Image 1 (tube, rainbow, N blue to C red):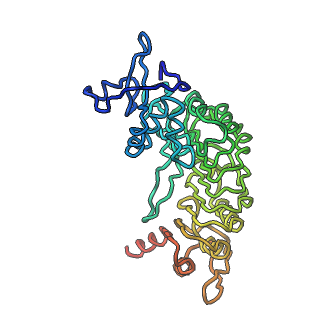
Image 2 (cartoon, rainbow, N blue to C red):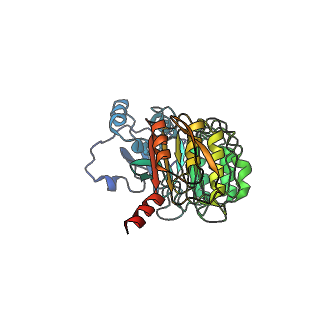
Image 3 (cartoon, helix red, strand yellow):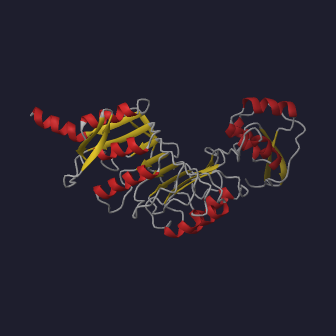
Length: 376
């Protein structure tokens, strides 16, 4: 905001809380609610926050978080007051244009997190009543200067969550962000189809060992060695190599996009998931709809190795050729041998009965196609 020093606190002795002029005329260059204006010098306007403590309490009672944050940006003292009500840094700049290069390219922050509008971090998908985070991040088109201007407002260790999803971001700025705030707990990265954010980011990402949630989309990176990782969302065109997820003992949520794997066969994807389920025994939510075929073998592995499953979503579109390999399926009355690459109704029924409290959706598209063919 031009003409305003954030380190300077401005004392306002008189404030008219019901000005006769419309708010949009009272505050033109900065959309700060509960602000007044005074002349600072020729051609400059200064916006100061209300200074009365009684009125302050009233504002804090009725103002939204966004209003408090805009108030806080008038001086550093008010910034501290605005955020003292929260347990962590809370910044929501969804409607605050700042450090932008073009119209509509503004920054957003939320709960210690740097969010860029258009990334739609909170966007969800619904499958048969189940709600999941979308594995696909949208292009915010913010640039390197936007990212740096946003993060420079925080001290090292302050930012808990960062979403950097843009085709305009280069590896250099993303590396700087990750190295400066390696204590991140939640991170979303997407190159959005550009080649500007490449594999050179991996070394900086590996420093983020405090991550609890990681969302990768359209960028070929692997999770860092964060033993406390609890949520992993794998978006489009991420996996060229098959990572080993066994070193994530606390992984609770695994969400894999249908386009996550690059140049992988159905069998390779299936085997990677089976190995992951055997190693990550703390999993509670698994979303693999269209990412790989749900088979009798997959359900058997989940029943035997993932005891706390609470949510599962997957589909079966065709049995893949497995050369007659079978699996000992753990039915309640005892194990019976079933075709490993197929999916039968008794297996899905046994799976659902094994996790009675879980929210399970298995879309057997192949069986429905067979029924339609028989009806003809």
